[in-house]
Length: 328
Image (cartoon, rainbow, N blue to C red; front, side):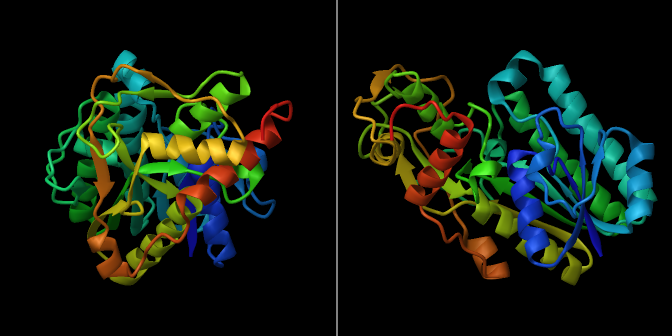
């Protein structure tokens, strides 16, 4: 069996490729390299450069490599950009997924794993801050909307064509399995902190008056290597199940406040600048922590890496790409 991993040269994608190949799974990557980096991939993994929207190309890859399962990670994922360019996000995330599913059905692929997001929940009102898969999905930006529509598409195709499908709702991803696989963007909170520190500026905290223990937002952070291992566990469950859908949260199930995270970053980097508190950002929920009851009970999967390991591994990757960094 061969798995086609779309977006497999990206930050998360390369970790999924690594986890699956180390476990003995055969993989082939389809990536347009708009943000992916070919050198992230092991030499034995074939890379096809192209778009999931190119149905003919996808069908050739499926036939040429004997693909029987797809892990779909390709797509646009920046919340702010999605607000500014909603048509682009719907075109790439929804129309691209539609074209991919057409090719999957035509090619006789039976297993399909979809990279979704906790952004589908929007700003849920939950008593203890823990979000279950039954929490109403009410996205508040075009990115989250495209992920929710994507889930609908995947499940509908699965029901109509007998596919085994899974939708993985990621929470906040950080860290790196090795420095060369680290995140190259400055869009998530940990690299944003590193970027500020590297420029001699204090990290920023947006809002310190939330109804949380220290007044800052509480989030669920997961190491990207744990996230990749979760993909492997879910992919293997699809193969065993044969049909139906599994929708699961992927996180650690533990809340960490923004101020607590900033303290860990300071310890790891050696930075002594106190964070600067600025006003709240629109749309930030006070707390968002995953309930992991479903994936634990159904697959026996739990994350094994903590927040400090996430920050330390991410810092190693940052310094590899930014060797002039003065602190740490």
